[in-house]
Image 1 (cartoon, helix red, strand yellow):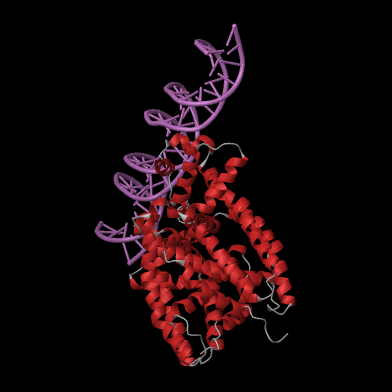
Image 2 (cartoon, rainbow over the protein chains, first blue to last red; image 1 turned 90 degrees about the vertical axis):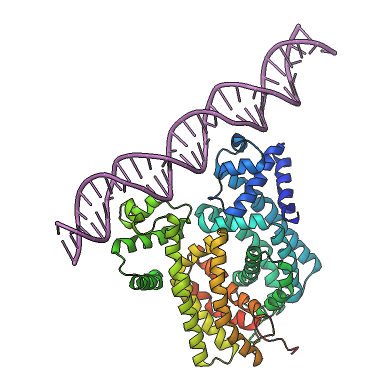
Length: 217
Length: 217
DNA sequence: CATAAATGAGTGAGTATCCACTCATTATTG
DNA sequence: CAATAATGAGTGGATACTCACTCATTTATG
């Protein structure tokens, strides 16, 4: 399952970091993630989690004392491990290859990040849904994600602007257009279960044109 | 409150349609909508609804026999009354004014629909959140919304394509880019509580460029 | 090496709480 | 006074969470 790859990896890291996590606890985490993604957090019972994990209900509470802690445990590796790593890897790659053109940047962003979205579809969905409803989680997430994007993406945008490869719009708007376009496609794909890859080329073209610098420079 | 205008209007229609709805029932509907938007459906209790509506808990169940019916009652007018009317009004306006250019169309869409999104922010949010989690609701909604868009927006797109004002992309992709761009801005605005109007001009420019026809025609 | 002690993951029946929903009773309206 | 609306205490079922106990594995001891 390509779907679980990245998160599996994240769980591995957490395991390695904080000693051993026994296999049943991993099953609990995996079952929680799957059920939260399918039904939403609030509609999932600890009984269901135990059943899908093939575990007694008490086991669910062994390591994580509340259902909310379970949600945090499922989401945390994503924001603290996966997301930073992938943003930085991406930035490093872009910088290394010295993408000079808008086309190169956007192509890289789209292909790379679409794959990322698809691989982490489950967590993305849980995160997204809960962010809409939980004020605290939202603030916490934004406090992490926004600076990360500012530090890694904005310099690249500035460079391209200087080279007249991007219009002189605020960085957050440019980022918004890029991220928004991708997320809207991701949402649609994940709801209709259609493969997201087919949309790639058109998105690239759309973004490339949309983010063309205005001649009034 | 500009926020409640359109929905208030929709509730009015439903009232007129199916006899009288006593004022306390309207308070119940309004309270439900507000709480669902703030906390999500699953995290809202009927006790909370009664409290906010200034009503006894039994009153909540007077007209709507289950909590799910209450959700349906809050959402239904949106999809069956507000949305169709606004789509058709929009299409009629566009056709009447005979927008020949991409710029005119997009400007009209953005200004019009952004105002619409903002006015119906609460319902939009509830609908959006629940669509992510409830399969049945999703199918039901798509079965209504998709044909509506196809019938009203696609012909306009086709005409513009014929006039070389739009690229020869599938209509659903073009619609996706437009709707996605707006929704992403709406989501951001509604989460950060920043006014959405400030983004309008940039969105228009971005979409206009992004949807420019490719010279390879 | 054999035995005892300690550890801690796992269990599942049990509990306190919460919540959607009911209904007998009371207030309101025409 | 009839009919409808509103009330709020009450109910059953579900759900998050607990706890006394088991048992396999690891560690200490003579």
